[in-house]
Length: 271
Length: 271
Image (cartoon, rainbow over all chains, first blue to last red; front, side, top):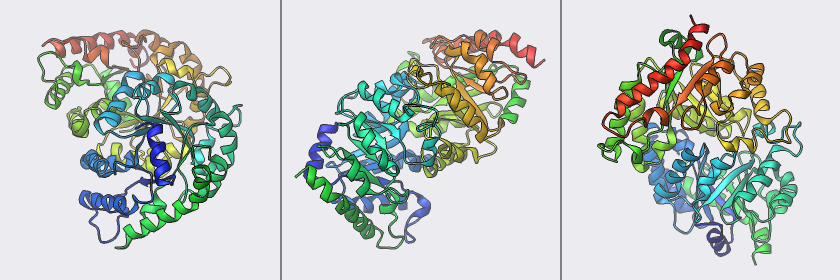
């Protein structure tokens, strides 16, 4: 599925919510076993409970890899649980020289059939081109991230224009907006106006709402374009809304609430 | 094992050669089956044949992930094959916000017990700190990479000092040289003198010799310091030296040849 395909789902579902499956075995609800079985049971119930309110899921590969030998199996099994009517992202932040990026592209786009993959820009064009060869998939390149460390290089004070702007203005020419999205952290909502000046058309994947302190309302105010143009992710705020037996219901409630927060903005641009 | 531990092995083995296990199932020798079994048989024979000439192995995770469901199993099994007297690197170029980097650190340092992991710097300090919490492990941060795309951002003409120099001079203060190494591509040997001005003490992991066009002699001439300070990787030039039944012997020959090319320089600084 490329961005056009995602946009069709967005128009139908009328929400820009992406639920992040950052499943941590140590944070499972008390009644679930702290093992691979509990991990999958948790994901299954979270997905079933939230799918009504989300247009997308984002699997954070690190949490699966940290499970050791069974990690990759958990990743494949969770991928298989994702609905076919959502835009399904592997948040893996891969990127390497060309022949190696080709292998990552094969892993996530072909073997696991994700719709999209997050990619790091540091190594430049030939590190990203192999992902863009998959015309029906979406490559999501890091622009301005939500964390404090984004100040070290992305907004380094000696560089003008800032590095993240150079990344956006350079990478946007490597693929069309049907194949290419950018990560822009919700904690940087005040930068969204100048970011829209550089990439008016592209969809942005916006993490950092909730646990990281970003606001969905602020993101919508400054980041929406005529196609919506936003996919707002929340992970911890939704999946760990309760540690009790009601975790799935509470996750659904949190997803519904975040989705309603965006609704007025989404309805304005996509009536 | 931290850099001190690696240095002890280096003094004993008197070679700075790292063999890169970029195992591609489609490039296995003709007589091996093009499946997981052939993949592992290939790695086993390559490791046995080259271990005499190498002080380090580097597993390129992308090639394992591209194998689909069995990929992670191949990664664990190959990790288990690596000698205990070599410095064993996961070349995975990970990096994300703090809680996620912690999970990658657990995966590679704890679950797989690699000695070192390559990490991308774009997301800054809190994306790298969780790796540095493992004091007995080595975090290898991308500095100046060997590929053409390094010109897009790492040596972007508008930025002075260039981004890769800002990365080196900033990241070097986040950990001591016992925990921290940098990736500097062999194709950029002419830059090694100024790089040594910024990070005189750190070990450099230098890929790009052979298939990518870099020269081990040039790297040694410009990059050595009083501890050696270099770990020179060759992948394709060694492991695919022959597609015949003699592939392991030819790999050993290629490893021996590259190691001898470095020997005069290594012997000069580590008599």
